[in-house]
Length: 271
Image (spheres, rainbow, N blue to C red):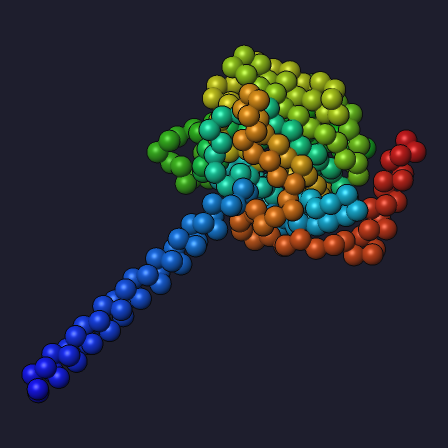
């Protein structure tokens, strides 16, 4: 009887020990899976700046509110306030979004709509708008390349080249529809359905990280859609938790902010 009692308790201890080991393994594994699942829903990475998800009477949008940017000079994007896709896109032929540029503070104001970027962001192409106190007056297609592949973490290890440029006239404190269409031969850029720039397509312009950058003014982004042919490969109206990094979650405008926004909208309607 004593032997049976001892064996019975040894069996209990063995079961408890196995349960304890499984718990130790399963807990961290579940957390890791949850973390991977969480990261899988992210569409954007806050590379630099203060990006806020706000909401007005038309719905949610994301806006950069820090405005000032520093010349860290490790790559062009870190010299701006930048939001980029969390993962590179495997292919795209068309990028369309709503964008607004508000309350300019320092000049020249400059914004980027970049595409085909590769980490650590020394290599990219971008549609760049620059402007003075009156508004944006120049549209450019630029390209950034790595100078020395063996010095990727060194400051200034990239070079910017202007591929094409054209004069433009865009106002601040107003929303626009921006669209970029690209294929192996051409890149065409439209603002409010009007072509503002056309250029020969730079090399490797149809895959990689896409995003937006600003310095000198608040940049508002909404309703982003990316196509690869007829297939939609990315769509976001910023109504969900899709940004990873230091971002202020969705909030409604304050009464003062809303009144200022309404005044700007009414002012633009009269123009």
